[in-house]
Length: 369
Image (cartoon, rainbow, N blue to C red; front, side):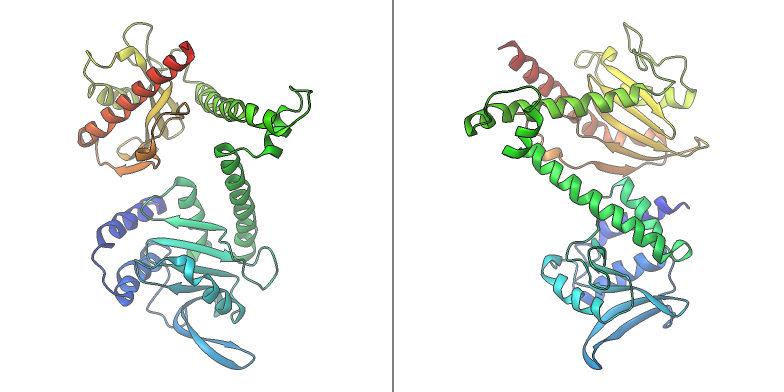
């Protein structure tokens, strides 16, 4: 079983047990210890490798116990503070901060068994940052997080390399968060910067307010086009994607396996409601993206030998401002064992296509004004 499969298997278990565990001890046993044992491959029964209730001591004064200390070659590398599954982790960062100061470990994890927050001393040596460099929610996993988690496996753990990666993740995350905020609500400084080459007049408050919606629309459009162009850049795809001009049938350049996946999805849709020519497919390495109109409908991940489907992820398309996608802000990930199981998610796929149609119509209506 691959590491990604182990992570997703644990995520499924976390979803099942979240509403069942009643105490902090049950959370530790059912969710947290199994994560370190089954996913990261630490021996939780070895008191030297996985130390429970380790003393937190500063200036020879013991003032608390760290739930777990992970050691490699007898040296502490990670401290873990574990809370009940329903606990809000925001209220416990200071406690972990003090524990970190008492330990020689370079990494700290605060978790309630569902959410894992990873900390280090990036901003100031030997002093834990108050913001995590990575947060992983097992109810909403992302591919990049799975790859990052693999660095914490026992057999791959390297403190220096991981610290460098943590530094990169932290600042990437901070910059992305700032950019996301600017996309949602561009500040005057951000608007001023972007319009400076196009508008030579005085940048008053009224001008900022006038250009702010233009800035948001321009950035959203650019991102949409960039993603579409990236998919089209695959040598196996062309301007027609997987369809011909008339019927949307799969293109001959694709392998039978990809064609079958595309056909399995397209057959879920009624010809009277959804034109087949609006469906396209694009292949990238071990991914197959299926688009409806100009938005991604779903994304398949499968084994390199193409013997079994692993995952299907429904994607939120980049929608025009004004369309209500609040109910689908997250990407839903569902493991499937074979193509016939796609039928299980037929309603979800059809609902996504209907929403794309709604937004397409709304966008056309606005442009016609």
